[in-house]
Length: 321
Image (cartoon, rainbow, N blue to C red):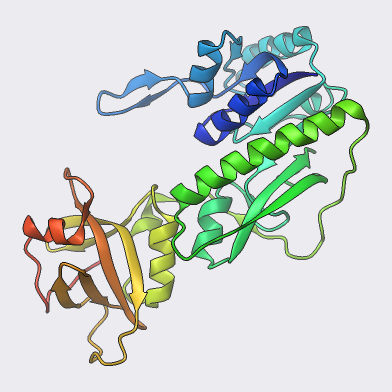
């Protein structure tokens, strides 16, 4: 089976690597154009492009696939490359471009997507973040036959994964990337031997995982501690939960809601206690223990080490950034 692959970040690179290792012929890879990154803001290839070049796979990086859009020349060049590849199927994982109808119709077995949720829950751009933020106890991956809608296609396979109280977006991302890549290999092998069973998504339970905005990272101390603890986990590693103490902005990498029944309630944001086990901060309901912190320009550190270089005491007031 000849497979065109479309993807951009590390999540997609893991899938591409597994497809390559499984022996599928990959005549072409599509990925986002190189973007400036790092302190020098130099152009950097996506993880998918880096893997493709390392393994001698041709790469196309159109700005758009719309044949009548502003980048029509690039879209037409990508179309010619895709047709020349004579692929059976396109596999898509976190590509970042919408696929027009002409792409969906270009392959005998269509376009299949690896989506990091159990559809129809958490369609959209940030399913891992939103599942943790909402307090979901499980998630998973769906292999979907793509259609023109936003994550609305029929389901070809689903695998469920529990979300533990310790999971962050970083840890869940890695687990789901591996699970999705493995499941995609299984689906493609099934497709080699015959037609796949496609199941329409349920009409109930549809919701959308909207893209994460940086301003969401600011911790609102009037919210319940349990909700803030979920946000800390959801926003690790991006955009990272933040708060302010005086003129200092502090990133909060790890935190837990704690039983504070014996502590007198203070205004939200008040630091109640400080020791090597954590910084206790009053919330609108309950108390949040901050256990891994980072100053601007510094390293992320366990709270005990952080406090040796940053003075903080009970009675101080944290604020949103």
